[in-house]
Image (cartoon, rainbow, N blue to C red; front, side, top):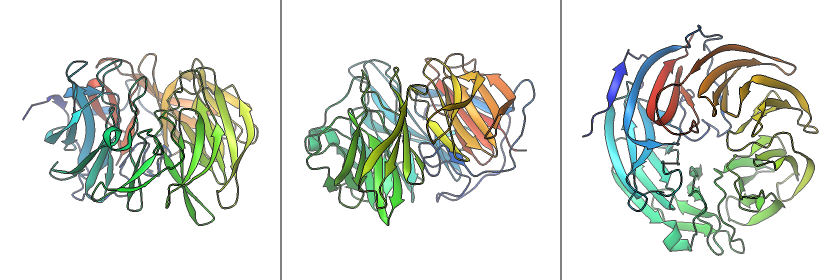
Length: 410
């Protein structure tokens, strides 16, 4: 077993269950894929040096993927090797940063920006991952033993994209949702216990666009919301029928941002100058129309938030913005934070800046903001692209091989 180099200061509040609790971070963008945590009792401000670092490790392989945290385990993907022989590994860590087990799940993306992309999805004692080359895998959360694996490119005629699949699987009822981009199988549902095909999007064949999907419910219908290379789409979660599609295409077909729901409205943003738009869904979610479009928030892949009915997210080359969801107009700018991956908990935005690796704590209200703490990530390698995770009073930050935990509990 490969050993991690570590600087360990201690950690508290261990949980012994695999089932997710309210303060866990079991998947991409948290408990409900919204980037919002319901945790309270967190620090309202940080000292000048930032919150207390609990530990820092160097992982055996590197990644852009965010961590998932459930019970007494942290789940993290990484990859290593050359362009033609890159291997992906899923790690389970204890809450002090020590390796518990590792599972090599197969080939990984090895071309441009060759770090692991997929954040694990932890659900009912299993961990689900979707590799940069279209391999969907389920392993036991306690042991790392593989339960099933499906090559979705082989099975569904999927085709890879410019920078490799960068999608975290979504669990809806008994199904795992992934996006191989095959003919009559743009998006597919696999049985979460066996990996067998449940449905494919017949008649819909667009490639993936790096987007991790979200599920919402309208009129009793569960609707999968995601972005493909040319559209925002709504898919019936039970049947796989494509209910509607609205054009959304920037020059590179890069649309990594998970949609953000405002009741019967859906907000989405794309980078490279494309901008953002708000959709209005019908009462049963079977149709969608465009309410407004704006150029101001051309969010690359840092994600957006719905906080108290306001939209928060970064512009590609500008600051963190607060938008009015009624028309997309800018309410205010947070000038100190630029192009940052964001999450929200206990009246604060946690922002991880791509440009210089700064991590900021920002109190936001419907009309203004206050930066109440910051520190800078000075270790690790590659771009600062990984999203953070927050679980049980601990903030997890990743930069390439470096992975850190900070005590943010009050």
